[in-house]
Structure formats: structure tokens, C-alpha cells
Image (cartoon, rainbow, N blue to C red; front, side):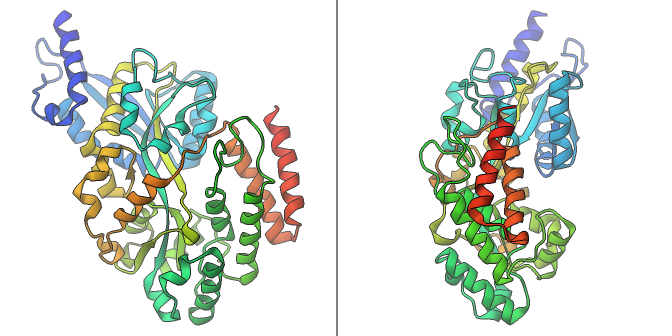
Length: 428
């Protein structure tokens, strides 16, 4: 038994340094005197599940004593199922993937281990991550409940061929938000293509920009609701300007209409995280290779658009092995770079930003070295506190924005109503 424990401890230490790990032999599972394999469950969602799946070959070579079963669900079903399992305490995975939109709610739930405490003691690991992502996984009690797996530097992806037909230059798109809308009018008149899928895309990225110290998307870190602030007024007004200009296709992100519009050239641009380039290449518009480009957000905006995290439920059955696997995914440079190469999942691990891959041209983006842009953006995005009610507030704001653009509701009245409803629901 002592030999088994010593071998397991050695394997954990090996994983902290991938280069050393690659040279360390491991006993075959089930061999005489070897460890009995343990199977851990990882609950995930697309495309993060693909990154974990791709890591298994190397993980299995390093840790044959720990087998990994990945359970993927679609984005919404995954987070709903995880919330239910946390509430009931049954059927919990060993490792739970959480998207940025839900991390605040899950962090405050009390259902996860604090990774800053023993046996994890993650404090010394934190300087290795992009700084702005760490507060997102930290709750109001100072507990860090997850490690970041990837980040989403905000970017503008656009169809260069459509802009060229309309005589629109990249500079016309990014000079300011007003010039962005004006360029969209020219594009629509010349090509018939919409500049944006939905006016809400512009609203969302503006809400993620120009945050002051202590401000989250919807809540101040002291708990105040911020949705009637000038930031929200400007986001709503410019979103309304997009709708009135007729330059959005009114197609919600991830809908069939949205994907078809991007694939068929009826939607010329999309504001989102850098990871969208991987989705475009892999499944949305694979036949459009060479036609897309990446640009900074208009008006010098710097924003984070999403990101993914891994957490260990408080009642997880195999915590030690789960922690080893999370560190392998989040802290192993080779794994972080592999996810970037496969999916354009931008590394949360800062040391991976020095990899030569970030300086390589991207064929799908016409040979553009776009990862250099995304690296620069990631280095400048400020920390944004999260709140357990962020997902609820997102739904309220989107409903009120729809009232503005579709029903003609006054912007300030819509935001006042949103604030009242958010405050009411947050008190429940």
C-alpha cells in the first residue's frame, strides 16, 4: 500500500512539469503490483469537450492509473443539469466545466471545493494565469472555486470579400461605433449583406467595455445594480441605432439562421470572443477559408467575451484524481497550445502566450497573424467581478432591449424597469 501511495504522489508531482512527466514511466494498469485504475467523470459542453477529449492520449500515457470519461451535453442542457445535480447532491461528476456566463452563479453556490485550501493549495499557481480571469472564479467569501481553462479576448471577425465589394475598409469598421454603423449602411446598400447578426451583439460587447474599478457587467462588487448607468444607456442606444439602420439580420447567436447567415455570406461580421474563429473554421463556415479577417473592436474597446473553467464539486467522489486532471488541462503548456491550435480556445495560461504558434499565420483568416492581436487584447482587459445573479440579469436585460428595438419602449424606462426587476429577483 505504501508503494502505491508513493507512486501516486510521484505522478502528481510529475504533472506539475510536463517536460519531466513525458520522461517518467508509469506502471501498466492492472499489472502486478500496479494501481487499480480509477475512472473519473468530466461533465463538459461543446467545444470545450473536444479539447479535453484531445488531451486524453497524452494523459493516458502519463497516468494509466486514472481513466477519464467525458460526458458532453449541449451548452444549455449542461449548465441546467449541473445546477440540478449540485442542488440534489446526486450524480455529480468529478470535474465540472463551467462557462463564463454561469461562473458567478456557481461560484456563490457553495457546491464546490475552495481550491485555495488544502489539499489543493492553488495559491502559488495563480500568477501563471492571465490576471483578469481569476476574479471571475472567486466568490464574495474569497474562495476560488475553479481554474480557468481558456479566455475569450473580444474581437471583430468580418468577411473581407464582402467589405471589398462595398468599398469599405477595416478602418471604417473600427474607427468608432458610429463609423461602424455607417459602414454597415454602405455594405447593405452595395451587397445586400447584413453587417451584424443581431443588434444585441453590439449591445453585449458595449456592456463589457468601459467598466470602472469594482464594476461587473450588471452589479458592482458591493452589490449595487448598475443597469441604468450611462454604460447601459449607450449600449441600448447604439443597439437601437443598428436596428433602425436595418443592418442586422435579427438572427440570434447559435440559431440555425445565424449559422446559415455566416456560412452563406448574408452576415458579414460578428463581434465575439476570439474562439469564434475556431467555430467558423470547424463547423459553421469551413468552406469560407481565406475570406474572414480579425480586427480590434471598434473605438479602441477592450473586452473579454467569455471563457471556460473547471471546478471540483464538494461531493465529488475522486477529488485527488480530478485535481490532477484539471491541472493537466489548465497548467500544462502543451495542452493549452493544442487547444488553441484545434479550437482557437485562447490560453488562460500566460506562459502559453509565448508559444511560436501565436505568431503563425492563420490560413482560415487569409494568412493573418490574428493571435498576436488577441494576445495584446488579453494583456489589457481589466478584471471584471462576477455575481451569482449575472445569468438572471442577462435575461432581464435582453428582454428589455427587445422591448426597445421591437416595441419602441423608451431606453431609460426600459433600464429603470430592468433595474427594478433585477433587484426584486436578486432578493429572493
